[in-house]
Length: 368
View 1 (spheres, rainbow, N blue to C red):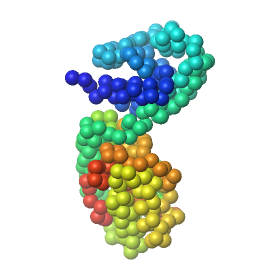
View 2 (tube, helix red, strand yellow):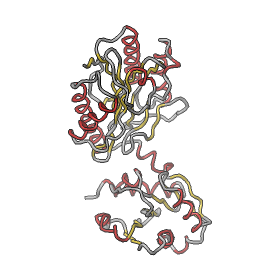
View 3 (cartoon, one colour):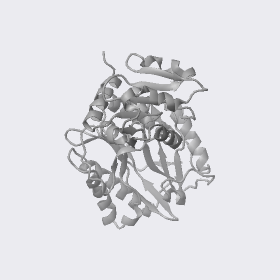
View 4 (cartoon, rainbow, N blue to C red):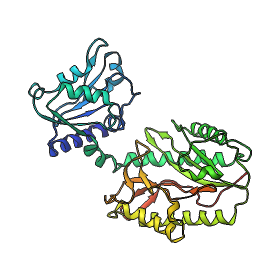
């Protein structure tokens, strides 16, 4: 039975032929994981998958690490280089002899370290390098069934972690302490790489991406909680704004506007709608309520192997939505010196509209 990775490789090679590209070079990156299921840490040692438009790819890897990719040998050639050798020379050697001195168009991973790109340009001076995203982004932004299932599982796990967090105390504790609790809950439900959760209390919540600080959370203020973590190579992403004790009338008003914007965007999602039209739908709700200038970021971003990937729901992006695209729906209002409020779900485009992958209440959560 052919693995999904071999099927993806076939699609990539067809795309290379159609785009008249001679090779695709993928270093350690989300793109490499998408095509092989393999990843490792990025270092000064070159790992590079060389894909021609036809025939078998070659994985150029440090010689002492070849055993980590031996499971790919059924459909990928493995070429190891010794510590005393130049890996760029080995990359050149993997090319067809006629190509080593010819003008080439090579798509190269957007995540490749600049030092490697510069050395490959020097080794292949007649080659033109272009971003690999022109080939892989259109494929990756439309998920297959297995990807959708993993993303749903990731969101369910994130919800369980958040449910555990809101059962605990907030008042009198530092933002950093609450963030540490959230990382613990993510690990407890089986999520990985839950680094950098955002916990912004009171005026800190008005900065959408402010890292948790030593600020002590006070009773009577909202707290923005935004976090992502990994399940089987795919990200969850979830934001809820909770309130410590009874909320003010002003916060209730802002919360209801954000909730309506989230729901309005969800209703606007359907195949054939443009990315910017969904952003506009949510933004119009906030603008009409008088808070237009306080919604300072795009409505959403694609999600999958990366927490931020295509498609992006933002003004100017005329890309049309297709079934099985996945992205966030996360409107927000940020009032400097007071508080912030954001509500984020992961959504998939369906044949008839949309489906939420984040199944968690939109009610205002009051915490202790």
